[in-house]
Amino acid sequence: MPIDKEKLELLKAMMSGDYDPVAENKLHNSTVSNDLHRNNDKLKQKDIPTLEDQLKQFEKIIDKALLSNQDKVSIIHGKGAGILKKELYKRLKKTPHVKRFELNAKNEGETIVYFK
Picture 1 (cartoon, rainbow, N blue to C red):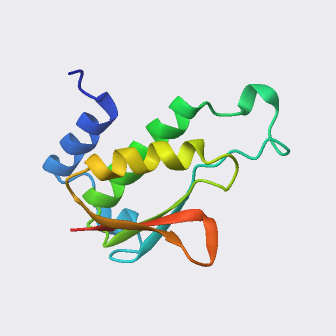
Picture 2: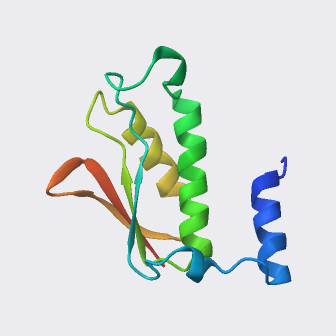
């Protein structure tokens, strides 16, 4: 399994004391919002992220939230055809640090992820 270089650099910075996740994230122990959905109307064709790009960004969001000791994180996947949401849910079910996740009752294009 290949090592994610970005995660490795983040861990090195944390170990050396050069990175303070609480200082970087002013919303410590609250919800951090992260927008993954693509709005084709506002983006040029070359700037539209692929599903793979969105899933990589999702992994980074989850890792950052966990490293910052967040209680929960908000993931905006959009409403669309539901392809991104289905993939996110598959991954969330396999993530050991996820306590539960639920669709935001006020916004069907957003899921709230709660950590253990």
